[in-house]
Length: 287
Image (cartoon, rainbow, N blue to C red):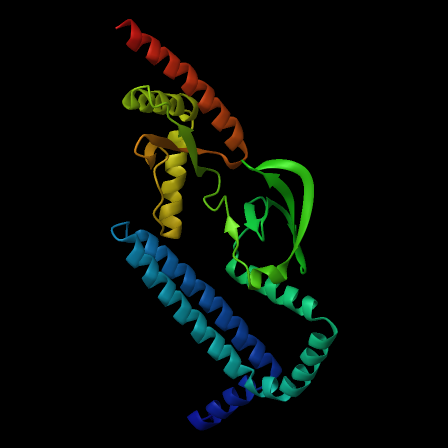
């Protein structure tokens, strides 16, 4: 019984690789291996700990891009002959589409960018082209959002945003951190009342209102930091001082809450702060 030598085996494999079935198998194998390598790199980066998150994320992004570039080159080389044969026809079709419907083509390109970069998902609160809203639906042409006003409060209107905007305009995701978001609440400070007393009253109000979910939010942010290799602030309330002038300043309260409860939480904090401040002022006066 004779076995084929190395040259015959190489010729057979080369012939199979140039067939339609061979190209499809090589492409599928490349995609699967690429996905597995990227997942391995992400898992390895998470297991390294959080000693230097910025450096870990730079290394992860560099390694991931190199793997994806290699996969694209390999798939392109596999289908090079087919691509070359269809290049003229594709150029003619693309030119006709561009002439007939430039906006439609731009929307398709924007959809491709949305699928690759994923700047937002269904349910996120976003800002695009001076429009704020909660993402309801996304198709091949446009994204539909429920319009919101200040504090992510729904107006009852819906807006359809074409995906061509994604190619030229920035997208601001207001709920990129998921179940909990960090917000800032500016509070005007009365110049005749003790600053430290007002700060204590504001922090006490924030702890009274937000205390029920602070630990849960911190655990959520820690998981997000480990998964995405980013640094997030603590969910604990903090007060920052903004100087308006020599005799005027404003407190900015940093607090955490769920995205759809922002206005309710802000109103509760303000009411609690005013009551607590009045009690502190009365106690200070009695002394």
